[in-house]
Image: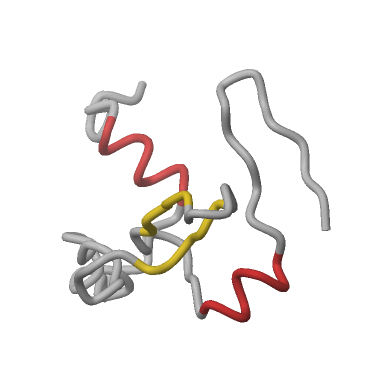
Length: 83
């Protein structure tokens, strides 16, 4: 299985390898070179969970259904200023 090294020195870990190691987006990984000169990748310490999204608890909680034009008028402070 091959991949290309980018100009920035980055590579994409092939899906088969990510699946085999249980790697998910945002998980820390460690790289090492063994005695045979092979690169070894494994999950780094920690839980492997993403940092909590500070907006996640509020997402989808609005109970007011805004129409786009009304919201834009509010944001532009146009309410009551229309001729």
